Length: 196
Image (cartoon, rainbow, N blue to C red; front, side, top):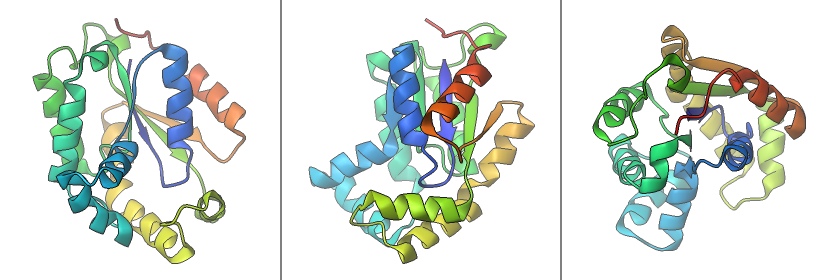
């Protein structure tokens, strides 16, 4: 199974991706977690990324692409994965298509059931702001949150149409309890067989 989790900051992408990855025994690949770990470790990539993250801006495409390509080459990703936080722009999505063709074992397997799916969790902005403020992260103040939502609407929302046009989009209402969202995701994706 190859899934991309999309949705605005605070929509619950990470939580749902972790739950489903655990259920299906495939890796949850979160670019946010990888970036934050790089910042803490003060790697060259982390130091470059930190200035963008502190301002609430997206990390430039090339930095993320290098990070994702490295991760997709690891052996555990060959059996399927859930990608959280990438792609965030249409150019990244086009790059990702090429990456799937280049990475051994990561590309589409034979048969319709193994095709890439893009899951979009939709949540109203006022709910997102409340959720993000309650997390208490250092970079989550209301001004930065609203800026991140604006950046998301401008740069990431076009991905919804990109994947809808390709008939790869699974849309889910994320403004419900965690259990309700998980149940709908499992039902929506139950027609897809996990590829091994």
